[in-house]
Structures are given as structure tokens and as C-alpha cells.
Length: 111
Length: 117
Image (tube, rainbow over all chains, first blue to last red; front, side):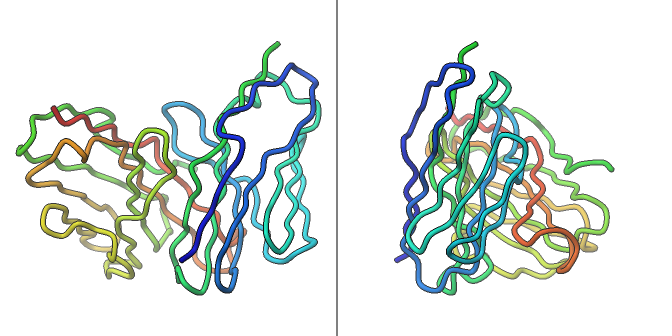
């Protein structure tokens, strides 16, 4: 059965303190790994799609990387406005068209 | 470009009552999804439509949940009768046709928060 595990569950950073969020996955036939950002009371907002090991994507202070077992979302010099829950999702040959979401990492950036 | 519209934003009902949620996807998006997000969890797919046909409803509790997408645009999700464990945020999402935008880009509405007492 496909599994997606995100860690840590919660992370508090000082403004400017870089860190990484982890998404470990066990799937049969990965068809894509996706990162979303969710603000309180809002729906998730798309960030990145990664397809194969070694692939990297960047957007402002965020950089997503992918290996055969996990993905990292690196946050460089975060600002308070980066505070949100970051969700990882996978699509695999098992899930077909479905996106299977992890439980997320709640990030708080303190000024 | 207008986003995905959902209503109502909040609903409080007693158990065994019924409730309906409405979603209007982004214009031109043929694929529409309903997700259930329980507090502290990631979204879980309930049903996926392609135009007005069902693609996947394997995780929809069909004894109490129903959904339709008439004319391939708006969609309604109904729960009847509601149980306490149905308390959650119901998210509607849509996606553009293949080849338009990155694969995996779902556009979510703000959700409808349901509390069942």
C-alpha cells in the first residue's frame, strides 16, 4: 500500500533560519510528487511537481528536491509570511488519477 | 481569473440531518474533485469528475454521500444522514486540461467547514 509520511509535524523557525521539511514515500510506480502550501482557513495552493530522482524545482525562498525515497522542501532565509502548512502528495500506478496527501508540516516563522 | 467558488463556508448541523455543498470550478476546467480534510490530516479524495462523468468514487461512502455534476460545470456534494465523524472541511478542486499548466496543479476552493453535533 502506498504511504506518504511528512516530518516534522510542526516546525518553528526564527526569521532567516533556513531548514528543510521531509516527505518520505513508499509507492509502486511514482507518477509524480507534489508540494502544496495551505494557509489557515484556505484551500491548498500548488507549489511544485517533481517526477524523477535528482529533479529540483525552485520558487523564491523554496526549493524542492526528489530522491527515490523522499523529497525535501528547503526553505532559505524564511520570512513570517512563509508560515503555513506544507503538504506533500503523490500519484502512483496504484493510485491512478488520485493524489494521495500526507498529513503536512505546520511551519511557523517567528519575526 | 476567478477561482474555485464554494458555498456555504460554514455549516453546523445535528447528526442525522442532511447538508449540501456547492462548487463552481474555474471556467474551462473539465476535471473536478471533492476532498474531505479532517482536522490535522491531509485532504482525502471523495470523488473525481471528468466533465459530468465519474472517474473515481472508490472512497465515497455511498450509503450517505452523493455527488453530482450536472452539465459538466457546477457540482453538489450531499451528506444524508450526517454522522459526527463527518465533521471536516470539504474542499472542491479543479484542474486544467492536460498540457495546460504543470501536471498535478489542482486549484482548490476555500472549503466548506462542516460541524456535526
